[in-house]
Image 1 (cartoon, rainbow, N blue to C red):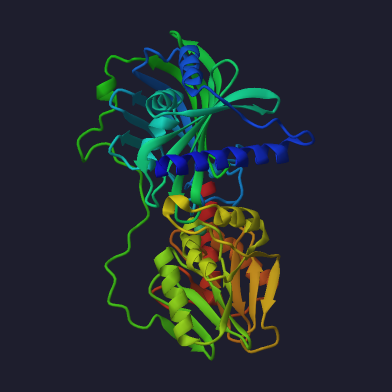
Image 2: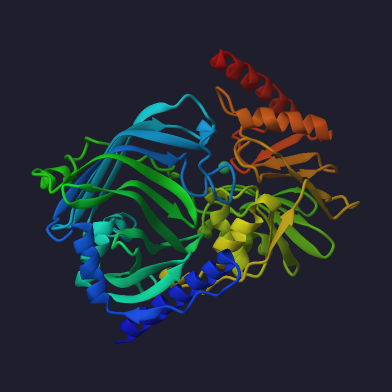
Length: 505
Ligand SMILES: [Zn+2]
């Protein structure tokens, strides 16, 4: 009963939040409050309208796309992330085939695409694969239930609730149900579907726990429905996360109840059909020694992980970069408090909002430390860090996020003067570097001096010259094995520019 009550409260809160969002978007007249309706009838009517009553499985094929590098690895923090005119922002997936078997249930999708990297090296041929079944984690399993047919079958089996709601002048049946699967924080995962006046499922939403974005909203949007052998099939599908489109399908063909459905959803034996590439794991950690290396009086490099720079001023401390994970962020915070005790840590500075450079921010925000980030990132980071974290079983954060423009100077006129400079570039439009003129230090993230080339290094070198920055130490959040200097940056920029010019010929 407790769970039911909690679920009802969550669903109600969710519906209220949707209504509030609609009001903001919609303008003058407040829409009428949602009216409870008969959920069984709503689901039964939609199944009939969708031609889903006898549907046990379906195969969709066509062309898909995905935002390059994925959620929170995009050029701009706030959506839209896919810029049709900029081919570097997304990858096409050809020969895309997805089969959903509602009887098992199971889902498998495959396709051909490119494995591109963030440095824009020549893309390498790769594959796209997604497998899900009842044993999968919610991140995979939700793909079954987010489909229009999976949503309706789940609603029929899991005691749905429903309201009638006006949105943009149209009436929708909004159906919500709780999955039997519970989150690490305890509450069940829930699904909410928006069924239009024709009985078609236009949108299905769920939430999944995310270490940065809390109860991350995932929604599939369905449009351009066509009748295929009596089954209504959306020919255009888009998946959005935190409000931005990340993945889409242009369906060319659909086959309801394919004869070989069970075969189509069965992954090949291990060793065939590779999965998606993940980030490189770090080797076994050595027993920790002191993380802090003193670079100057009150200036510490925090080593052994994504590196951070802690700078002491008269009244407070600022830290550039929070690290790649919550554990790393906590380790950085603990180490700074050890080497600079009894002083307020006022600012944690975000090099750029990519997830591997933002995951470590959480412990700082939990400690009430103000986040400084480039102004382009403020709206998005404030939104995701303010999102409830019930699925993680955590308290909602109350972040203070302040924007930095082209430049911000901390401790001006003191030996530890710290300048934060915005560096416009094609990796992130919200990137800051840390520059300490008195100590001759420049610290950056992802302007790594790589071979054969890193276009962002070219962009940084140009702006370093333009701003007249001078330094002996070129420090990286991704630490170099050997000391690097301004001369190394300039040399790498020249080599990279030449390699790019040669490749583009
Ligand atoms: Zn990055």
